Image 1 (cartoon, rainbow, N blue to C red):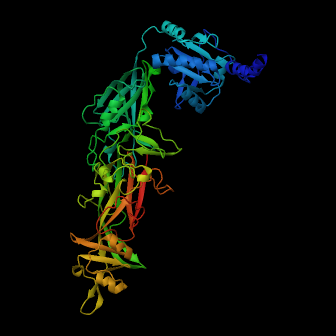
Image 2 (image 1 turned 135 degrees about the vertical axis):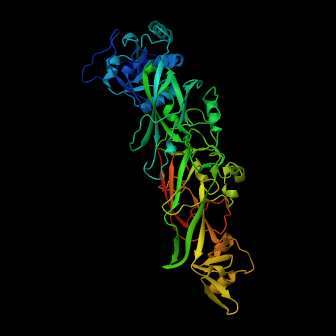
Image 3 (image 1 turned 135 degrees about the horizontal axis):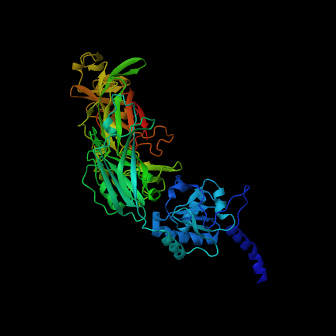
Length: 622
């Protein structure tokens, strides 16, 4: 038995040391005792925000010092978790580790099942003013900022004792109002003096502010503001338009806050966050695209991650400026051509002119998440069961993270037949028709569209899933070779009125028939057969058909979101993301395209699907 105790003795010494002593400071500090006023301090929360002791004026709170290697500390933390669960923001609980990093404490918190916040001291001397020799050390601070009582390892704090002290100090219920100053920042891209800048893209004409209890997720209240004007205008590099509102009052508490700008759909009645999100996400643009934004402004929301767990208690009966960064639920797409006519040449000899006359978006979502969702890949196998706040992940540099739209998890190869997904799209490429094309503006002018977010799982970034643009162009050959059956020769014909309805491009020359190609090339193609593009492709032949006064050709471009990625199928290489500004300019044409659009939706045809069109795509992300 004695030997066993000897073996355990070093371990006992280690445990005692971890709960009682710490390394000495090089400079002496004044220790805080019962009855003393708490010295000013600054802590950094786990989300990077600063907490100043001055913001706690008039409140009772708990200040606890711990170490992750201390068994007694673990017991005390469970007691303080009970206080936090019952009182929430009414009694702030400030947990300060001895020397562990934020990452270490986060892991410890998760293992212990703790949900209350913890804070990292900016000045290490703060720790030794309170807990230089014995931990855990729990201080009960009264509403005047003085230490009412302390608890250490003997006795360890218990819930009943702490609550008794709190009830003695709280002279009135934990309530109060906060005068919320809402500072709405709307990111704007482009020069306000640019003729292609439209002010109503960034207009806020009405605002709903929804408050949900951060712990229970139950609805608390909402504020509605309309007929708004710009009270404060800023013109900095990122946020060019700022609205400032001072007429929102809210009771103290810890809230998840959601804002809806310019939301003129049916009124929402929600008992909790889940119901709220379900209702707002049921609203959709049936066409998947808007040609113009109304004068009242586009639908905008805050980034959900930025306003989760907002603690208003420190600002009881004061004013608090809440910054809300708004983003559009649609992306802006600007499209144009660098010149009105592109010449096709071979060895300095022009053989045709190309005029891109029209364009049409394909694979447009009909549905969207009102608040942006994000998920990590590539480990997913099925659609996850989201729960707040994890469906609103903050962006991290590590790993491949995707913005997700409502169809994201359905757009997967071999998951189900692609035709069942097609019904969720407007202008689905799998059932493409050549009507409803928009006219391409002349050079140095631009067409506009506002498009719903459309993203795809990495392996689904192909022509069946991703958004794209189909261009229609007029082909004007320099000449067409016609076969003269009387003379048994090929004749150069420069007059379009003598050209047939279908012409063929072979070896950079246009021919009026398959027979003419056979004569010129020595090929032996069936001259009675009606060929489609795929049948001609092995022979290096393309065809153009006459329609509505011109010979038509079609090009398809699958919209790239990240044009700087080395991986051709990397994270978010293809797709459209909300609030972004996509500027596409056709800068060159390298050949003729397809005679008709016959989508082959089950084949990844990167890069041949748009290799004949040179595109400069400028993606501006907030």
